[in-house]
Length: 316
Image (cartoon, rainbow, N blue to C red; front, top):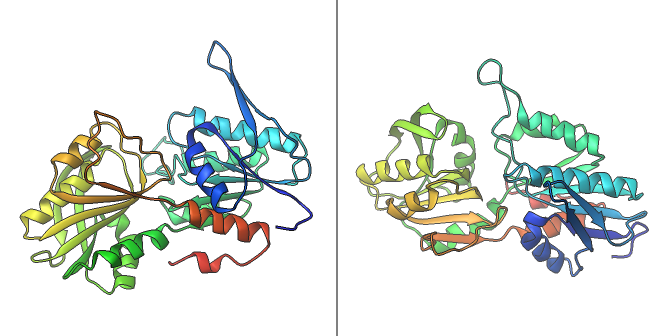
């Protein structure tokens, strides 16, 4: 990469695993940085090499806790104050994206506030994958590269060679995303309709579409407690489906998610590594298949850095 502004890739702590894969794909080394943690919990990131005049990419998914977002903001501020030419935040999983509108009185629009914080810190551009709502891109006053993980998921689904394939949306809100997969794969769409009792608690659920005798893949942007997706899977099996798989870009997998997936009628859960899924003795990972988004992000980073079109990186 011969360029007047040198490219440098750095990572915050929670996304180091993915940053290393991205850097490796670009045949680069991750830049040196440290984080000093004080006894009261305050922390201070620092670049351990010059970034003056460089195009700096900082990789960090803003998963809970809030420290991950704040660490990214501090790194952006540090790069700006160290005279970086451009500071680009690579946020594979963009947290607070579920707060994209006022769905009831007296609540914040968290996604817009995060966009404001990134701008205030000195960010020039954001790269992210599968936002909870496409319109979040409009919350930013600078470029947003919104990548779709469908480019890794679609080849995997095709390789399964499933007969009588149908795509399902776990709720009405995800119908557009699921419909895009159904259109590309040339198969029918099923929409599950749910009523929520409260956040993270699903009440009743029904299906719109032909379910009997189908191999179904439920498409969503994230799996949090896995309540919706497992309830949808069990309901679809009761209605005569042959097999049920779930596919989601962001594996938040909080609370009872692993236990629910293990006990459900789901045959397989296909996720990406925008959020680290670390195996442990108390997590049943037998149904979970992880595909990496590292090469997609590496490709877009390379094209943005070299002022090339990135439209070929989008499938829908």
